Length: 203
Image (cartoon, rainbow, N blue to C red; front, side, top):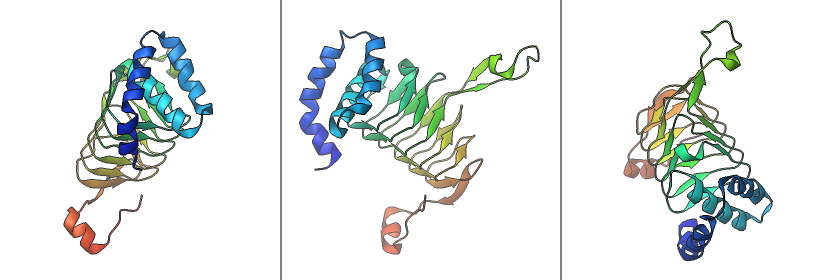
């Protein structure tokens, strides 16, 4: 059974659990998020989804979050539907983070929506002010494993970010981007041509 079909069948039960979580204080919900890593796979995914629905600014349907995912500043995080965020990824929404529909984020990726300044020489760099920068991941984006997405970046629709890339500036839609810093390396072909050629983007 596909994940979307499984979610559809479980949605009434999930919605009931989300209603119960409305009376649970935020610190306890964050504790539940951490403990969910010790639950069986499907139960843990369901628990994390319900907590995410309760804490995030917005969360759509059929969102899978793997074990060991850390989220900071939940109230500034918006996630669409049919999204997967795989294990040991790190999402910091301090400067606001928007993830649209049909996005897949592979394991051990980081999305950080702020950056440090260093102009005040009287203080250590770690104590200098931070600057926020909204991150937007548009619909139908595949982010490969170990990718770093930094503040102020927008990744356009139907784009692939290759494994290990560091995205320091916005990436247009419809491309494969790779490298440090990441840049578009080729356009993604139309679906008919892609099927006919047998080509697969290597990430």
